[in-house]
Image (cartoon, rainbow, N blue to C red; front, side, top):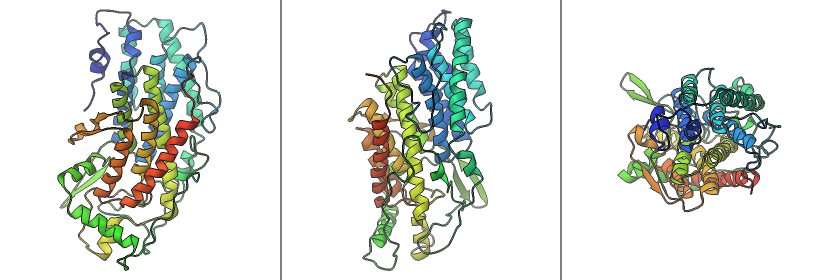
Length: 443
């Protein structure tokens, strides 16, 4: 569902009274408002058709900027990520004697980095203007307003400068993927036959991982479509049979975790695209759902989003190294060529190699970070997909959700289940590394 900013700011917070002109602190010190701000970025990402890999970059730098504002405003309670994330040097600490509103500043820093690392300037201008108007409407004194804006700008400048060293721009001009139609090797798939997405993503600077190869993926099953006793042939038949006989529940699982940011629909000569949140956008939503259910305070909510975004960012780097190291063909291509030229998966095949699975890797990593914040056996109902016409699903834990995602990619016909299981193990390692290495809340 889409959120109304005014409903969030004025309706969702019972403590706010429209008759008062000095309740700005209560307005901004509200974790729901942070979650809705992340949602605002989510909608902008979706509107720009960014791939899941690129989208993860927006969420990561935006949340880090917000967290550094909180850490700098409350240095006795929270640890800066400077020195903990690769290449991040000292970040400005709030100046004593200059009163400000840390939560307001965190929201501004989030928005500034959210749009600036990828989008053209102004992508979130209207939303930022509404935040500033909210401050004015609720009586924020001029000195606190100005100090908050200035501090947000100073932190944002450091994070923005740091982001420019992650090799993202260099990968924009890197050579394209060399498509070779040889047995077992990935080639573009229907209906768009799009080129390979982000073949150089492993060159992006990781946040916590020592390098893209820190957790190497084992080799996938050897391509062998002739021997019916081979592991490869068995997994091809397993996925074909599953898609050919999907139950309504299995189809719902696949659709729920589809998270295709741009599906190309083809009907005769008519082609049109439909958009949904990408995998990292889905997990950003889950972080907000969990924070609300746990009644987490503002800093804890920011921590949950930030740790999860960092884990997703590094998980994609780890996974994309495996994808373009092995260049494995998609099930759709194999089945069309060797078994049934008219076979189609339940979900649309994304434009990159099959092994390993990005969604399974990222989901496992995100599950570990959210578990570290909210605990294991944290049950919740995921309402993310309601606005796309897909009914909600409930889980007993974040790890259970990640495990279901493995089946979702299999039921969707786009990943072998073995690939998803391997990916889940690797993603868990990435998430656990983030949890172990990052020190955020001081004891």
